[in-house]
Length: 409
Image (cartoon, rainbow, N blue to C red):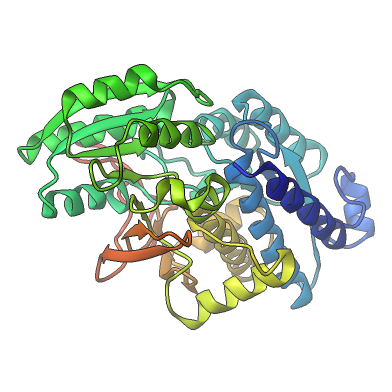
């Protein structure tokens, strides 16, 4: 990772935040009322192993808030962003969520990345009857009335990637992930589908979040002889993995990797040459055509620098604020329960394409597989023809389970 450019990004983001939020960052409810603004929480890892991925999502979220404020705010009031650092620690996310809800009286909180952070925050939001807008793909097997899931469900990312892999005759698959909820549950689902389709699970390994020693894992991979690696590593562990993979001569041509947490931002920080030729499955890529995406990319670069890139979780964080605003305006209130019900069925022509909020509080969205080019952008080589409805509980892995509250898209 290029630490100097990363530090410059953080300094630039801090300057933009000052412009957006003024002196906000812990004002009381009375102060918010006096200034006639609506406080909202922005909760991401600004330090620790996940900062490489989460700082840009914070920036995109703040961009949406800036744009909404410039257009007149929400219910005639400006939004007051209160930014907190989850520090890549689930317990810290829970503590900061509690602060944002109880002390800062945030009308909504936008944030989280790892499923461990989301699961740590879930009881806080449920106990306080508050709303979390979560922007990242996850493993499913969860459905809370106090969370809106803006990222992909398994049937909107990992399983379509498996469809693509089988179409390419890559059916002997090695599963590698960080050791926490998302990779383990995602791979549980993948194993059932690989076996159901007649494929082979060549091996399965996990490393601690933030782990950097992959020597034994790579030896196992070489011995197993897979045709492709399905990679659910998160954070800067990916830097170490791809460097060590490359050092062993396992190039993209010899052994392709398809990743579920490496996007344009991570590729830029790692150095595109390290991961060029490998693949990723997402709902959004910066290279997508269309006016909404062109506007989003241009606005982000205008705010943070002409050399900046955007990616799927950033786009979801940006879209989350706009969908919340739609729901608030429809409800005529920031009351979480009123907003929640008003959100069901809302649609948006997002940078990724048309999306809609289902009554299980997840998004219908298209799915794409991209091949990483040497310039750090992805060439979309496969995709669904239309948005895919979200399915929180995979019927093969979790038969008989479903969720939804009525009236959704």
